[in-house]
Image (cartoon, rainbow, N blue to C red; front, top):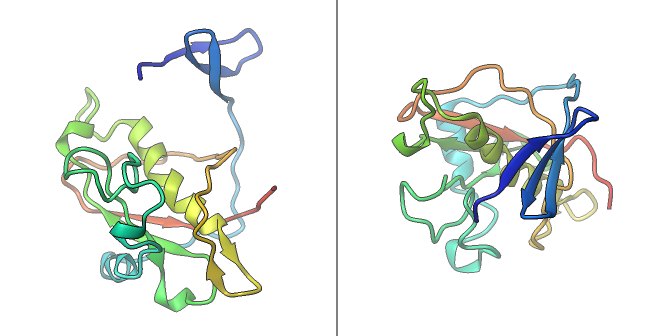
Length: 169
């Protein structure tokens, strides 16, 4: 569905479907207490532990994590727990962006970088510390902050890591 983005008088942005506001955005300062990193082999191993099998996926056509998407149609990011963090909510996946995701400058467009962080972070937020497992109930992020420091080139292997910094609700 085509959506319109527009700036408001108070410095926020709105994403609209006609008159209906679907999302709002604003500048935020991001300082993380920790940054989780993984190497490409470690991220690939985490994918083998992806939180849902293709036939069990709650949203099989999701643009980011949907296994029903064909290569080149969607991001196909399948995050799983890092083995060195087996009892925490640190997830990782490898991702090789498709050429169709390039912006005019030849790098992956920022909106796809943001998208790549969405589902893995949502899955990480579904970690239940008491049981030491992940709830399989679909979770949509209500708020998300990111700072893009560099954008990859399409075809360049990248690593996605995700972990929760808080949860409300």
